Length: 271
Image (cartoon, rainbow, N blue to C red; front, side):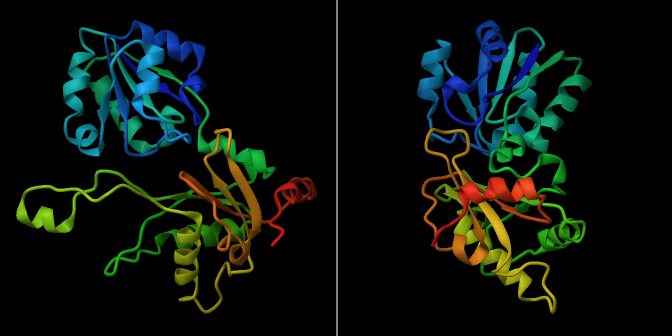
């Protein structure tokens, strides 16, 4: 059997009892290591201590190119694939389920908290969100703005927009790809400050932008951890805030209900 187990957002203690029971049954543990990380910056050591078993890190290349290896193991043994947050917070994990089922492997999913519902802490009601967008790191030659149209559609309906910020872990350098021998960039995690800078750059290319530096937003850092940080304010205000260590995400607010506004006031930027 293949177990796909959500770990939650904070530290090793956030796994559910059901998830921990499944881990204890498993012969082999893999941990997805490129779409997210625990807010505490936790290494696998604490997890292995709790589980009493070693964990194999599964980076992007492993999951995308060698998934059949550990899926095949699940034919004759219990294998766990551990995911920070909830198993279906990233499309890669849905693809694993499809591939496993096509191979005749039984799959059991253990759910957990993810950024998609934890953002409710700021008071913006979850059913008032539109499509989620991802903000990638810009480069000198690649500055995509496809997220802008999605934000525009959301705002036209008065809906909030969750912006997930880029994580680059074990990304091969362009030079190494050209040489045919991979070397990797240092890990990078986009900050709210960088995200806003890029969002405003794309908006300025439009005659009547759907958002400006005066648009109200909410910045989140390390959701689920003891030192999580939540700040509400304009884009201009949030650019001046030091949100500290990753992970960060950003919500661009739409039309707010009075109760949402009242809740947001608790997190209002005072600068």
